[in-house]
Amino acid sequence: MEQDDLASMVRYLLYAADLDTQGIIYSASRYHWAGDGNGTSFYLPGREYNTSQTSWRWTGTRYIQDIVLAAYAEVFPNLVKHDNFPSPQDLLRLVKVGNIDFEGEFNHDTDGSNLIRSLLLDHDPRPLYLQAWGGTNTIARALLSIEETYNNTRFWSHVQDTISRKAVIMASGFQDETYANYITKRWPAIRVESYGSTASTWGYNCNFTGQGSTVGLPDKHVYFTGAWIEANILQGPYGKLSRTWLDGQMMPGDQLDGFGNLTTALAVDPWCPPIREQYAYLGEGDDICFLPLLPTGLQDPANPSVGGWGGRAVRNTSEPNLWNSVAEEKSRNGTEVLNYSSDRWIPAVQNDFAARIQWTLTPDYSAANHPPSVRIVNGSTVRVAAGTTVDLTAEVSDPDGDKVELTWFQYFEEGTYPGHLKITSNEVHATVAIPTNATADQTASIIVQGTDDGHFPLSRYDRVILQVC
Image 1 (cartoon, one colour):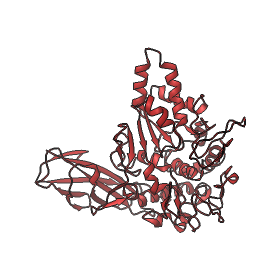
Image 2: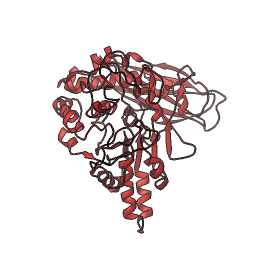
Image 3: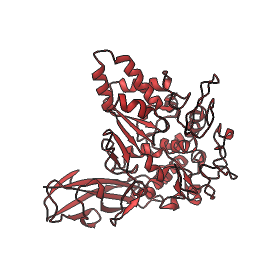
Image 4: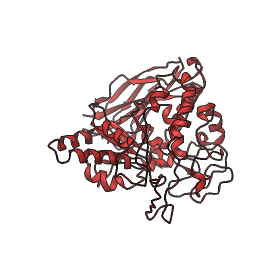
């Protein structure tokens, strides 16, 4: 729960009606660990500290319960007027403490690792998405505990195969060595998605180019300015929890080291100097772990290679079950743009967040905006012949009765046809021309985006894959 983790948690809980949260677990990382309470010193080379430490930048194990969920409870009566949010009591029961003693420590079971273990071994057939906002050590402990129980039994092969198909690790980069040293070696079939490069959009914004930072504010910067965030995000008892530059808020424990004044007005921090604009976007580097799961119409959690609010990922060539977020993509004019895979969705993501902040402020459903629904009636895949055209039709509705504007576009990287397709559209109808040089089995992805005209314009999508036959 450093600054950006807290801000990500604030955003995450506003989507708790869309995701079936099974646990919220404190864990350690290379940047934060509690120590064992016995004065044991710990040191690894190449870290922020250059001598052994008994703890490092630890923020405690009560912030989620006492601060975040307390504020959530305050606005919960309003939230449930807008969607089926879980109760504060239900969420509190999910909070556990995992392996927090040292970076990469996973040598003993904890309440957090035991919860993950039980979820991996239950009979729920759905995938279990393990969000690694810090290190993967608590996840590693759960897997090691299962291995120690079943490794020498006749059930081991079945257990390992079942869990490898069920578990999906979604990490905001690797913040300890347990993935490399244990998970990938002993559980190589588990799919792991590392969205480290997407942090260029959602991670810390600093005044210089450096590890873990971006150059000032990202593209579409209006949504990261202090004026926009103060007016639209830092509202009410819940929205004010979010962390921004120069807001005067500090985390427990931060006062003890050189990172302590990260968001105070007098901060001069050697790692991430502040943007000198009060309330400007600070960072939510862990949004990238759950944005790919949100039901926007773009998401396909089973296929990280398709794009969406969390960006798009590709297989690692040396580790086939490791997926890494892409660094650049083609914009709509066909030029390669750095960070475009995630930057392209900034207006939609930020407006959606702002609209949900409004949900926390009003019990009146009609006083807030809610997302439209868009569906391509042709289906998810349409077979087409080279040199022909295909007519596509969308259905659209809006729960608030807002006008919804439709935009049709080709998502280049989601298809195998290398060129531009000509798309002619008239609101719910679009015609796509298939070039004569398209060859059998080439594909093209066509997206329809529906954006309403509410105070915070909200967007939803659908996708059709055109397959040349």
